[in-house]
Length: 358
Image 1: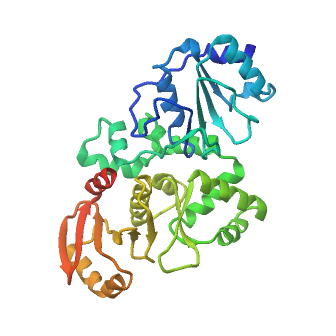
Image 2: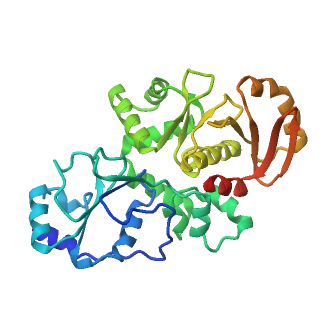
Image 3: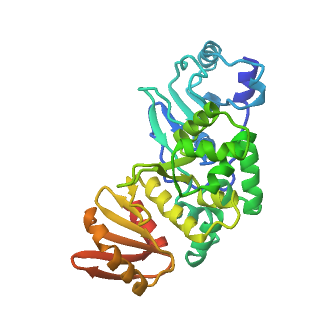
């Protein structure tokens, strides 16, 4: 009880909070989940300012005070009943930490992966999209926003930090992942955007550090569930899936000399995923949506160059039923037809907003 009183008496401050697109339901129990570093805790701490602090109990389950003090459902229930707690927030929760949740007017649970509770509303939080990033970087102009986004990536802690991006990424890597997870991330970054199987990843990993097959498969499952690592199926290649890390700037930080085109390609794929657009890869040609729209990352390519390439690949587009081709660029804008197939080039900053609205 003394520890729970300590938690209730804590006061938390969020400095210059910037609202996110992710909105929590006003009523009902909620599971806010998402990858580490996506900003879950900040959203909840801001929400607490709108609640009655006398009837709100926030518990960070990664608090070291809980290492030797086991938190039980019974102790929570007694405290909730005695103090009249109406809102219970459990941060950094993992499935099975409690055998069951206490009875409280409203429960909010923060986790990395979705919980399997039918009575709790799941709400997924991704890292920042481009529009959110511009809101965080209020001092950045629209014209320079893309370059800042490219350097900073999608993690809110980097967008708001006064430190250099490298310092923040180093702190994030060291504080959020254990030593073997860090090694695995380095291996994954080296093969970022390639078509891979888990077995291939295991083969690459054991060349770099001592690792068991069981540990790697288990960790990759957790990374995938958390969407730290994403796999995209190919429309016609069945061997392996395209593997992406969850943040393009973080992937670049973990490698040396990563080509710009790989960053740009990842920016586009992550934007599609964050906006709930289901895609497959079409070999090396781009990303295909359920509506048979082909999206091609081509940051600097001219209209003449793309037209020549489109002519040579036109038979492939026809074979796989492509209905429209969107070419995402850094700044170029143009359009053309080949037979009845429409090609449109649009800058990333405009394209990402269009997809956010769909």
